[in-house]
Length: 254
Length: 242
Image (cartoon, rainbow over all chains, first blue to last red; front, side):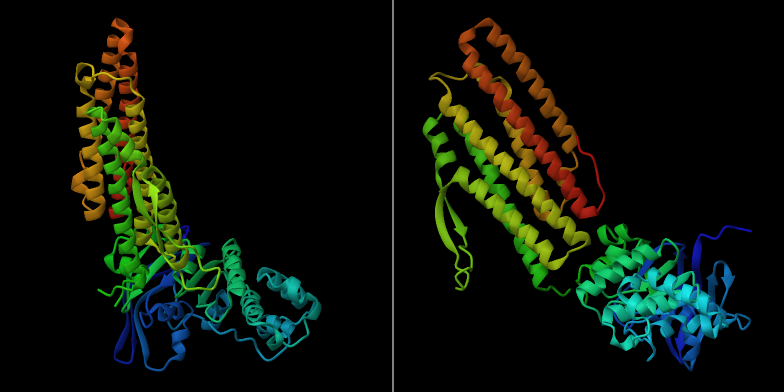
Protein backbone atom coordinates (compact mmCIF):
# COMPACT_ATOMS: atom_id res chain seq x y z
CA UNK A 1 0.00 0.00 0.00
CA UNK A 2 1.23 3.49 -0.81
CA UNK A 3 2.45 5.42 2.17
CA UNK A 4 0.18 8.43 2.66
CA UNK A 5 1.95 11.48 4.05
CA UNK A 6 -1.17 13.58 3.97
CA UNK A 7 -3.77 13.01 6.64
CA UNK A 8 -6.27 14.99 4.62
CA UNK A 9 -6.43 16.26 1.10
CA UNK A 10 -9.00 18.08 -0.99
CA UNK A 11 -9.12 18.20 -4.75
CA UNK A 12 -11.07 20.87 -6.60
CA UNK A 13 -13.41 21.22 -3.66
CA UNK A 14 -16.43 23.46 -4.21
CA UNK A 15 -19.06 24.06 -1.57
CA UNK A 16 -22.35 25.86 -1.88
CA UNK A 17 -24.78 27.09 0.75
CA UNK A 18 -27.86 27.16 -1.47
CA UNK A 19 -26.73 29.29 -4.40
CA UNK A 20 -23.90 30.98 -2.53
CA UNK A 21 -20.52 29.46 -3.22
CA UNK A 22 -18.43 29.34 -0.03
CA UNK A 23 -15.47 27.30 -1.24
CA UNK A 24 -14.01 27.60 -4.72
CA UNK A 25 -11.72 24.96 -6.21
CA UNK A 26 -9.84 24.34 -2.98
CA UNK A 27 -6.83 22.05 -3.28
CA UNK A 28 -5.15 21.58 0.07
CA UNK A 29 -2.96 18.89 1.56
CA UNK A 30 -2.81 18.54 5.34
CA UNK A 31 0.42 16.76 6.31
CA UNK A 32 0.31 14.03 8.92
CA UNK A 33 1.55 14.75 12.46
CA UNK A 34 1.88 18.44 11.77
CA UNK A 35 -0.07 21.47 12.86
CA UNK A 36 -1.70 23.28 9.98
CA UNK A 37 -3.22 26.72 10.53
CA UNK A 38 -5.93 28.23 8.35
CA UNK A 39 -6.06 32.00 8.45
CA UNK A 40 -8.07 34.63 6.63
CA UNK A 41 -10.71 37.30 7.22
CA UNK A 42 -14.16 36.43 8.56
CA UNK A 43 -16.31 34.74 5.96
CA UNK A 44 -13.36 33.58 3.86
CA UNK A 45 -14.37 29.92 4.16
CA UNK A 46 -11.78 28.61 6.60
CA UNK A 47 -14.33 27.27 9.12
CA UNK A 48 -16.39 25.87 6.28
CA UNK A 49 -13.35 24.02 5.01
CA UNK A 50 -12.60 22.74 8.49
CA UNK A 51 -16.15 21.42 8.82
CA UNK A 52 -15.83 19.60 5.50
CA UNK A 53 -13.13 17.40 6.98
CA UNK A 54 -15.50 15.62 9.35
CA UNK A 55 -18.65 16.18 7.35
CA UNK A 56 -20.13 18.65 9.81
CA UNK A 57 -21.62 20.49 6.84
CA UNK A 58 -23.96 17.53 6.34
CA UNK A 59 -25.97 19.05 9.16
CA UNK A 60 -26.60 22.25 7.23
CA UNK A 61 -29.61 22.15 4.92
CA UNK A 62 -29.01 23.31 1.35
CA UNK A 63 -25.29 22.65 1.64
CA UNK A 64 -23.82 20.82 -1.33
CA UNK A 65 -20.31 20.02 -2.41
CA UNK A 66 -18.40 18.84 -5.44
CA UNK A 67 -14.83 17.61 -5.70
CA UNK A 68 -12.89 15.26 -3.50
CA UNK A 69 -11.97 15.04 0.15
CA UNK A 70 -9.49 12.31 0.97
CA UNK A 71 -8.81 11.02 4.46
CA UNK A 72 -5.55 9.06 4.36
CA UNK A 73 -6.17 8.69 0.66
CA UNK A 74 -9.76 7.50 1.01
CA UNK A 75 -12.69 9.41 -0.40
CA UNK A 76 -15.02 10.56 2.38
CA UNK A 77 -17.61 12.58 0.51
CA UNK A 78 -19.62 9.57 -0.64
CA UNK A 79 -22.79 8.09 0.81
CA UNK A 80 -20.95 4.95 1.81
CA UNK A 81 -18.75 6.77 4.31
CA UNK A 82 -19.65 5.96 7.89
CA UNK A 83 -19.98 9.49 9.25
CA UNK A 84 -20.12 8.41 12.88
CA UNK A 85 -16.89 6.45 12.47
CA UNK A 86 -15.35 9.37 10.56
CA UNK A 87 -16.12 11.83 13.35
CA UNK A 88 -14.59 9.44 15.82
CA UNK A 89 -11.39 9.55 13.80
CA UNK A 90 -11.56 13.29 13.16
CA UNK A 91 -12.44 15.16 16.33
CA UNK A 92 -13.36 18.78 16.68
CA UNK A 93 -12.92 21.52 19.28
CA UNK A 94 -14.94 24.70 19.04
CA UNK A 95 -14.49 28.34 19.90
CA UNK A 96 -16.69 28.31 23.00
CA UNK A 97 -15.86 25.50 25.41
CA UNK A 98 -18.96 23.31 25.40
CA UNK A 99 -18.74 20.65 28.09
CA UNK A 100 -21.90 18.64 28.74
CA UNK A 101 -23.76 19.55 31.95
CA UNK A 102 -22.26 16.51 33.63
CA UNK A 103 -19.24 15.71 35.75
CA UNK A 104 -15.70 16.01 34.43
CA UNK A 105 -15.41 12.22 34.34
CA UNK A 106 -18.74 11.75 32.56
CA UNK A 107 -17.75 14.29 29.93
CA UNK A 108 -14.61 12.39 29.03
CA UNK A 109 -16.10 8.90 28.92
CA UNK A 110 -19.28 9.96 27.17
CA UNK A 111 -17.91 9.16 23.74
CA UNK A 112 -16.34 5.79 24.55
CA UNK A 113 -19.53 4.77 26.37
CA UNK A 114 -21.69 5.71 23.38
CA UNK A 115 -19.36 3.62 21.28
CA UNK A 116 -20.11 0.64 23.51
CA UNK A 117 -17.40 0.44 26.15
CA UNK A 118 -18.92 -0.55 29.47
CA UNK A 119 -16.02 -1.88 31.52
CA UNK A 120 -15.41 0.52 34.39
CA UNK A 121 -11.67 -0.11 34.56
CA UNK A 122 -11.32 0.48 30.85
CA UNK A 123 -13.33 3.69 31.06
CA UNK A 124 -11.22 4.89 34.00
CA UNK A 125 -8.07 4.23 32.00
CA UNK A 126 -9.43 6.11 29.01
CA UNK A 127 -10.43 9.06 31.21
CA UNK A 128 -6.98 9.29 32.75
CA UNK A 129 -5.15 8.91 29.44
CA UNK A 130 -7.34 11.50 27.72
CA UNK A 131 -7.14 14.02 30.56
CA UNK A 132 -3.37 13.57 30.66
CA UNK A 133 -3.22 13.96 26.91
CA UNK A 134 -5.06 17.25 27.23
CA UNK A 135 -2.71 18.43 30.00
CA UNK A 136 -5.47 18.85 32.55
CA UNK A 137 -5.15 15.63 34.60
CA UNK A 138 -3.12 17.20 37.42
CA UNK A 139 -5.71 19.94 37.87
CA UNK A 140 -8.78 17.69 38.01
CA UNK A 141 -7.66 14.25 39.15
CA UNK A 142 -8.95 14.86 42.70
CA UNK A 143 -12.34 16.14 41.63
CA UNK A 144 -13.30 14.04 38.64
CA UNK A 145 -16.90 13.90 39.77
CA UNK A 146 -17.34 17.65 40.16
CA UNK A 147 -19.45 19.47 37.59
CA UNK A 148 -17.51 20.27 34.41
CA UNK A 149 -19.20 23.65 34.18
CA UNK A 150 -17.47 24.63 37.42
CA UNK A 151 -14.10 24.64 35.68
CA UNK A 152 -12.53 27.82 34.32
CA UNK A 153 -12.89 28.58 30.61
CA UNK A 154 -9.37 27.41 29.84
CA UNK A 155 -9.88 24.18 31.82
CA UNK A 156 -13.23 23.59 30.10
CA UNK A 157 -11.53 23.96 26.74
CA UNK A 158 -8.85 21.41 27.68
CA UNK A 159 -11.60 19.14 28.98
CA UNK A 160 -13.25 19.39 25.56
CA UNK A 161 -9.92 18.42 23.99
CA UNK A 162 -9.74 15.45 26.39
CA UNK A 163 -13.28 14.50 25.38
CA UNK A 164 -12.16 14.58 21.75
CA UNK A 165 -9.11 12.42 22.49
CA UNK A 166 -11.16 9.83 24.40
CA UNK A 167 -12.56 8.18 21.26
CA UNK A 168 -9.11 7.72 19.71
CA UNK A 169 -9.02 10.14 16.80
CA UNK A 170 -5.94 10.75 14.69
CA UNK A 171 -6.93 14.19 13.52
CA UNK A 172 -8.10 17.10 15.67
CA UNK A 173 -9.82 20.08 14.12
CA UNK A 174 -9.83 23.27 16.17
CA UNK A 175 -12.02 26.21 15.29
CA UNK A 176 -10.67 29.27 17.10
CA UNK A 177 -9.99 27.27 20.26
CA UNK A 178 -8.49 30.18 22.20
CA UNK A 179 -10.67 33.13 21.21
CA UNK A 180 -12.69 32.94 24.41
CA UNK A 181 -9.68 32.40 26.68
CA UNK A 182 -7.31 34.64 28.63
CA UNK A 183 -3.60 34.76 27.70
CA UNK A 184 -2.56 32.20 30.34
CA UNK A 185 -5.16 29.65 29.26
CA UNK A 186 -4.26 30.43 25.65
CA UNK A 187 -0.60 29.67 26.32
CA UNK A 188 -1.58 26.34 27.88
CA UNK A 189 -3.67 25.34 24.88
CA UNK A 190 -0.87 26.41 22.54
CA UNK A 191 1.64 24.29 24.43
CA UNK A 192 -0.80 21.43 24.30
CA UNK A 193 -1.22 21.78 20.53
CA UNK A 194 2.52 21.47 20.11
CA UNK A 195 2.50 18.30 22.20
CA UNK A 196 -0.53 16.85 20.42
CA UNK A 197 1.19 16.70 17.06
CA UNK A 198 3.42 13.90 18.34
CA UNK A 199 0.43 11.64 18.06
CA UNK A 200 -2.17 13.57 16.11
CA UNK A 201 -2.58 15.75 13.08
CA UNK A 202 -3.95 19.15 14.06
CA UNK A 203 -5.78 21.66 11.88
CA UNK A 204 -6.48 24.96 13.55
CA UNK A 205 -8.53 27.93 12.38
CA UNK A 206 -7.39 31.12 14.04
CA UNK A 207 -7.74 34.87 13.73
CA UNK A 208 -4.67 35.37 15.83
CA UNK A 209 -1.79 35.74 13.43
CA UNK A 210 0.86 35.34 16.11
CA UNK A 211 -0.84 32.20 17.31
CA UNK A 212 -0.70 30.72 13.84
CA UNK A 213 2.96 31.68 13.63
CA UNK A 214 3.70 30.18 17.04
CA UNK A 215 1.95 26.83 16.86
CA UNK A 216 1.73 25.76 13.25
CA UNK A 217 4.11 24.06 10.84
CA UNK A 218 2.07 24.94 7.78
CA UNK A 219 -0.23 27.88 7.15
CA UNK A 220 -2.86 28.42 4.51
CA UNK A 221 -4.39 31.80 3.75
CA UNK A 222 -7.97 31.76 2.55
CA UNK A 223 -9.81 34.64 0.95
CA UNK A 224 -13.31 34.72 -0.51
CA UNK A 225 -13.59 30.95 -0.63
CA UNK A 226 -10.24 30.33 -2.23
CA UNK A 227 -7.01 29.00 -0.82
CA UNK A 228 -4.70 31.84 -1.80
CA UNK A 229 -1.39 30.54 -0.52
CA UNK A 230 -0.24 27.47 1.35
CA UNK A 231 3.30 27.00 2.57
CA UNK A 232 5.43 26.31 5.61
CA UNK A 233 4.65 28.78 8.37
CA UNK A 234 8.06 30.54 8.35
CA UNK A 235 7.67 31.26 4.65
CA UNK A 236 4.15 32.61 5.07
CA UNK A 237 5.14 34.94 7.89
CA UNK A 238 8.59 35.93 6.69
CA UNK A 239 8.33 36.14 2.94
CA UNK A 240 4.95 35.18 1.51
CA UNK A 241 4.78 34.94 -2.26
CA UNK A 242 1.29 36.35 -2.78
CA UNK A 243 0.67 40.05 -2.28
CA UNK A 244 -2.73 39.26 -0.82
CA UNK A 245 -1.10 37.17 1.92
CA UNK A 246 1.42 39.90 2.63
CA UNK A 247 -1.31 42.51 2.90
CA UNK A 248 -3.46 40.36 5.14
CA UNK A 249 -0.79 39.32 7.64
CA UNK A 250 0.72 42.78 7.87
CA UNK A 251 -2.68 44.31 8.49
CA UNK A 252 -2.81 46.32 5.25
CA UNK A 253 -6.22 45.01 4.35
CA UNK A 254 -9.33 46.81 3.26
CA UNK B 1 -4.68 51.03 0.56
CA UNK B 2 -5.53 51.55 4.18
CA UNK B 3 -2.74 52.86 6.34
CA UNK B 4 -3.12 52.43 10.06
CA UNK B 5 -1.27 53.97 12.94
CA UNK B 6 1.43 51.30 12.92
CA UNK B 7 2.31 51.71 9.28
CA UNK B 8 2.50 55.48 9.63
CA UNK B 9 4.83 55.01 12.60
CA UNK B 10 6.92 52.53 10.64
CA UNK B 11 7.34 55.02 7.78
CA UNK B 12 8.28 57.71 10.25
CA UNK B 13 10.79 55.32 11.80
CA UNK B 14 12.42 54.59 8.45
CA UNK B 15 12.81 58.31 7.85
CA UNK B 16 14.44 58.76 11.27
CA UNK B 17 16.85 55.91 10.60
CA UNK B 18 17.72 57.30 7.19
CA UNK B 19 18.36 60.72 8.72
CA UNK B 20 20.65 59.15 11.30
CA UNK B 21 22.57 57.22 8.65
CA UNK B 22 23.09 60.44 6.70
CA UNK B 23 24.30 62.16 9.86
CA UNK B 24 26.88 59.40 10.39
CA UNK B 25 27.95 59.41 6.75
CA UNK B 26 28.44 63.19 6.88
CA UNK B 27 30.63 62.73 9.91
CA UNK B 28 32.83 60.34 7.96
CA UNK B 29 32.92 62.51 4.85
CA UNK B 30 33.67 65.75 6.71
CA UNK B 31 36.29 64.02 8.81
CA UNK B 32 38.10 62.76 5.77
CA UNK B 33 37.96 66.19 4.14
CA UNK B 34 39.49 67.72 7.28
CA UNK B 35 42.17 65.04 7.23
CA UNK B 36 42.92 65.65 3.57
CA UNK B 37 43.41 69.36 4.16
CA UNK B 38 45.09 68.66 7.52
CA UNK B 39 42.68 71.13 9.10
CA UNK B 40 43.01 70.35 12.80
CA UNK B 41 40.46 72.91 13.92
CA UNK B 42 37.92 71.56 11.54
CA UNK B 43 38.63 68.03 12.79
CA UNK B 44 38.00 69.11 16.39
CA UNK B 45 34.79 70.81 15.37
CA UNK B 46 33.46 67.74 13.51
CA UNK B 47 33.94 65.35 16.40
CA UNK B 48 33.27 67.75 19.25
CA UNK B 49 30.83 70.23 17.67
CA UNK B 50 27.41 70.43 19.27
CA UNK B 51 24.31 68.69 17.99
CA UNK B 52 20.75 69.13 19.19
CA UNK B 53 19.40 65.98 20.77
CA UNK B 54 15.82 65.32 21.83
CA UNK B 55 15.31 63.50 25.09
CA UNK B 56 12.15 62.61 26.95
CA UNK B 57 12.63 62.57 30.70
CA UNK B 58 9.95 59.94 31.09
CA UNK B 59 6.58 60.00 32.75
CA UNK B 60 7.44 58.72 36.19
CA UNK B 61 6.16 61.92 37.80
CA UNK B 62 2.75 61.37 36.23
CA UNK B 63 3.16 64.42 33.97
CA UNK B 64 2.52 64.11 30.27
CA UNK B 65 5.66 63.15 28.38
CA UNK B 66 7.78 66.21 27.66
CA UNK B 67 10.38 66.30 24.96
CA UNK B 68 13.40 68.34 25.76
CA UNK B 69 16.16 69.45 23.45
CA UNK B 70 19.69 69.32 24.75
CA UNK B 71 22.97 70.15 23.06
CA UNK B 72 25.57 67.40 23.04
CA UNK B 73 28.87 66.87 21.20
CA UNK B 74 28.38 65.04 17.91
CA UNK B 75 30.34 62.00 19.00
CA UNK B 76 28.03 61.72 22.03
CA UNK B 77 24.93 62.29 19.92
CA UNK B 78 26.01 59.39 17.71
CA UNK B 79 25.75 56.94 20.62
CA UNK B 80 22.66 58.44 22.27
CA UNK B 81 20.65 58.56 19.07
CA UNK B 82 21.66 55.02 18.16
CA UNK B 83 20.33 53.70 21.49
CA UNK B 84 17.18 55.74 21.11
CA UNK B 85 16.47 54.45 17.60
CA UNK B 86 17.16 50.88 18.62
CA UNK B 87 14.67 51.25 21.45
CA UNK B 88 12.07 52.71 19.09
CA UNK B 89 12.54 49.69 16.83
CA UNK B 90 12.11 47.29 19.73
CA UNK B 91 8.96 49.13 20.80
CA UNK B 92 7.54 48.83 17.29
CA UNK B 93 8.14 45.08 17.41
CA UNK B 94 6.90 44.65 20.96
CA UNK B 95 3.72 46.61 20.53
CA UNK B 96 2.71 45.55 17.03
CA UNK B 97 4.13 42.07 16.46
CA UNK B 98 4.93 42.85 12.84
CA UNK B 99 5.48 40.06 10.32
CA UNK B 100 6.73 39.66 6.75
CA UNK B 101 7.81 42.88 5.00
CA UNK B 102 7.17 45.02 8.10
CA UNK B 103 9.38 42.87 10.29
CA UNK B 104 12.07 42.67 7.65
CA UNK B 105 11.99 46.47 7.38
CA UNK B 106 12.51 46.95 11.12
CA UNK B 107 15.29 44.38 11.08
CA UNK B 108 16.99 46.25 8.24
CA UNK B 109 16.57 49.55 10.10
CA UNK B 110 18.16 48.18 13.25
CA UNK B 111 21.08 46.90 11.22
CA UNK B 112 21.53 50.24 9.51
CA UNK B 113 21.54 51.95 12.92
CA UNK B 114 24.37 49.75 14.15
CA UNK B 115 26.37 50.20 10.95
CA UNK B 116 25.82 53.95 10.97
CA UNK B 117 27.05 54.26 14.51
CA UNK B 118 30.23 52.43 13.54
CA UNK B 119 30.69 54.63 10.48
CA UNK B 120 30.23 57.79 12.53
CA UNK B 121 32.81 56.53 14.98
CA UNK B 122 35.31 55.85 12.22
CA UNK B 123 34.74 59.49 11.30
CA UNK B 124 35.52 60.48 14.86
CA UNK B 125 38.64 58.29 14.75
CA UNK B 126 39.80 59.99 11.56
CA UNK B 127 39.42 63.34 13.33
CA UNK B 128 41.50 61.99 16.13
CA UNK B 129 44.22 60.94 13.66
CA UNK B 130 44.14 64.41 12.15
CA UNK B 131 44.86 66.37 15.29
CA UNK B 132 47.44 63.87 16.50
CA UNK B 133 49.53 64.18 13.31
CA UNK B 134 52.77 66.17 13.55
CA UNK B 135 52.91 69.38 11.49
CA UNK B 136 53.74 68.67 7.89
CA UNK B 137 52.29 67.93 4.49
CA UNK B 138 50.85 64.78 2.96
CA UNK B 139 53.17 62.24 1.43
CA UNK B 140 52.75 61.25 -2.23
CA UNK B 141 49.24 62.67 -2.37
CA UNK B 142 48.09 60.25 0.38
CA UNK B 143 49.06 57.22 -1.78
CA UNK B 144 45.54 56.90 -3.21
CA UNK B 145 43.63 57.20 0.06
CA UNK B 146 41.37 59.94 -1.34
CA UNK B 147 40.19 57.67 -4.16
CA UNK B 148 39.51 54.92 -1.70
CA UNK B 149 37.55 57.31 0.52
CA UNK B 150 35.51 58.51 -2.45
CA UNK B 151 34.62 54.94 -3.39
CA UNK B 152 33.74 53.91 0.17
CA UNK B 153 31.59 56.98 0.66
CA UNK B 154 29.83 56.50 -2.66
CA UNK B 155 28.92 52.95 -1.61
CA UNK B 156 27.47 54.25 1.64
CA UNK B 157 25.52 56.93 -0.21
CA UNK B 158 24.11 54.40 -2.62
CA UNK B 159 23.20 52.05 0.23
CA UNK B 160 21.24 54.81 1.95
CA UNK B 161 19.50 55.73 -1.29
CA UNK B 162 18.66 52.07 -1.91
CA UNK B 163 17.27 51.90 1.61
CA UNK B 164 15.07 54.95 1.06
CA UNK B 165 13.80 53.92 -2.38
CA UNK B 166 13.79 50.15 -1.85
CA UNK B 167 15.83 50.18 -5.04
CA UNK B 168 18.04 47.14 -5.58
CA UNK B 169 19.63 48.57 -8.72
CA UNK B 170 21.66 50.94 -6.55
CA UNK B 171 23.42 48.05 -4.79
CA UNK B 172 23.72 45.52 -7.60
CA UNK B 173 27.43 46.09 -8.25
CA UNK B 174 28.51 46.20 -4.60
CA UNK B 175 30.53 42.98 -4.81
CA UNK B 176 32.69 44.41 -7.59
CA UNK B 177 33.04 47.77 -5.86
CA UNK B 178 34.08 46.02 -2.66
CA UNK B 179 36.72 44.07 -4.59
CA UNK B 180 38.15 47.34 -5.87
CA UNK B 181 38.27 48.64 -2.28
CA UNK B 182 40.21 45.55 -1.21
CA UNK B 183 42.72 45.98 -4.05
CA UNK B 184 43.16 49.64 -3.15
CA UNK B 185 43.77 48.74 0.44
CA UNK B 186 46.45 46.25 -0.54
CA UNK B 187 48.22 48.68 -2.82
CA UNK B 188 48.11 51.45 -0.17
CA UNK B 189 49.61 49.00 2.29
CA UNK B 190 52.43 48.07 -0.09
CA UNK B 191 53.16 51.71 -0.91
CA UNK B 192 53.21 52.76 2.74
CA UNK B 193 55.58 49.98 3.75
CA UNK B 194 57.94 50.93 0.90
CA UNK B 195 57.89 54.61 1.82
CA UNK B 196 58.43 53.95 5.51
CA UNK B 197 61.35 51.63 4.83
CA UNK B 198 63.06 54.37 2.84
CA UNK B 199 62.57 57.18 5.33
CA UNK B 200 61.47 56.75 8.95
CA UNK B 201 60.39 60.40 9.09
CA UNK B 202 57.37 59.39 7.04
CA UNK B 203 56.17 56.90 9.63
CA UNK B 204 53.63 59.08 11.47
CA UNK B 205 51.89 59.93 8.20
CA UNK B 206 52.10 56.51 6.59
CA UNK B 207 51.03 54.72 9.74
CA UNK B 208 48.00 57.01 9.82
CA UNK B 209 47.23 56.19 6.19
CA UNK B 210 47.29 52.51 7.12
CA UNK B 211 44.88 53.12 9.96
CA UNK B 212 42.49 55.14 7.83
CA UNK B 213 42.55 52.71 4.94
CA UNK B 214 41.47 50.07 7.42
CA UNK B 215 38.59 52.30 8.57
CA UNK B 216 37.52 52.94 5.00
CA UNK B 217 37.64 49.27 4.16
CA UNK B 218 35.41 48.57 7.20
CA UNK B 219 33.00 51.29 6.04
CA UNK B 220 32.70 49.67 2.62
CA UNK B 221 32.06 46.42 4.42
CA UNK B 222 29.25 48.04 6.37
CA UNK B 223 27.85 49.28 3.05
CA UNK B 224 27.85 45.67 1.78
CA UNK B 225 26.21 44.39 4.95
CA UNK B 226 23.56 47.08 4.66
CA UNK B 227 23.03 46.14 1.03
CA UNK B 228 22.44 42.51 2.02
CA UNK B 229 19.85 43.64 4.56
CA UNK B 230 18.15 45.88 2.03
CA UNK B 231 17.96 42.99 -0.40
CA UNK B 232 16.37 40.88 2.32
CA UNK B 233 13.97 43.66 3.29
CA UNK B 234 12.77 44.09 -0.29
CA UNK B 235 12.68 40.48 -1.49
CA UNK B 236 12.70 38.24 1.59
CA UNK B 237 15.67 36.40 0.08
CA UNK B 238 19.15 36.29 1.60
CA UNK B 239 22.10 37.16 -0.61
CA UNK B 240 25.81 37.18 0.03
CA UNK B 241 27.54 40.35 -1.10
CA UNK B 242 31.35 40.54 -1.39
